[in-house]
Length: 231
Image 1 (cartoon, rainbow, N blue to C red):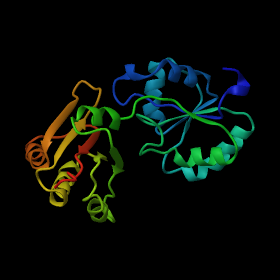
Image 2: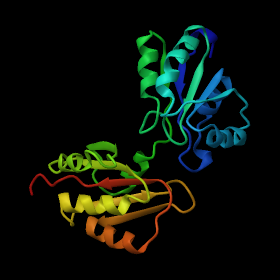
Image 3: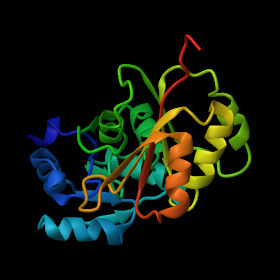
Image 4: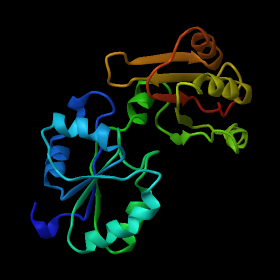
């Protein structure tokens, strides 16, 4: 791609587990970037080393993004081209990136997002639940607003997708069962694309019983059926 046609900012999805899931185009963009912005330079450094990519790496995460955005936009205006990656998956999906994209566009600069790995897509498709209409909720609030958010979804008829941590999944299943009823169908996907990938399907009550006696490791996507409109 010629210099004048290159976007100022690329959003580059990275593998959520299996390193072979990187696309050829993603590799090309990362090799051509003036600077790669990474959520965790140590994690990203392992991937870039595997791909034999040696480009300047700069930290960009939730704790410094507000301070970093203005300077990054100025550098783009001066002609630098950046690629943004997160630890895994597509940047800005429950990860830093939205603020930067918004400000780059507001400055009249060009942004391009490459297609690629996003954890909730395989989790939704292999859950066996309806995927013609769905709503992505990301992470529920840890404390304040959590109960209100769940209660606000009680009449939701679309399939719901949540991201959750290993130490909160059981509590979340119990809270959803209380709000939606124990017979609501759901699927817990963890370690997607990795050797120990697991997709546990059943009612919320069955999943609660399962995770009361099974340890949980890895990243989790929880897919829950919507309310039956005929109920």
